[in-house]
Length: 160
Image (cartoon, rainbow, N blue to C red; front, side, top):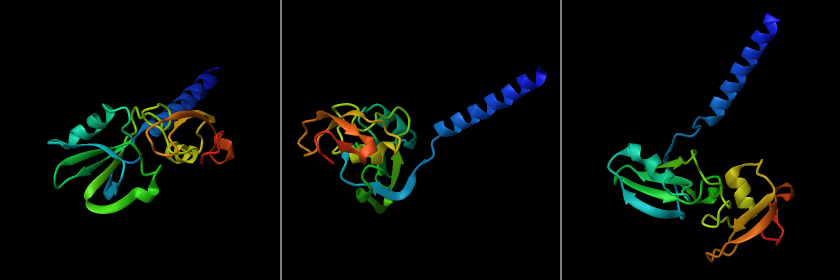
């Protein structure tokens, strides 16, 4: 009977380690890179420790760029995963992805995606097939659309 209890404790501790590892920031920052074209707020910051806090205060913040030379923090409404073509080399910038409390792309009308594929790129391959907020034309008018993530991220309206 004691061996069952020990087995359970080992199993429980292994499960907790995996969970804790999954919750840790895997990408602290990427030096010399910046995400261009998705800045929604720019500010001067005195202390680098404030970056995460500034991003976490904004519901649409997905990532941020920091210019270490000018002490500028630029909040982005996209990640490098959602828009890899806009992820550029620039020696004075750092790129940091928000991991804690990030609203998934397309989950709220204030953060619409351009397409279902952009949601999959941003949120990962295991993204659920459900309704998401999309703004396919980039006009600022989001519509709620069903995205079938099993069909390569196609929406019910045919937007890709």
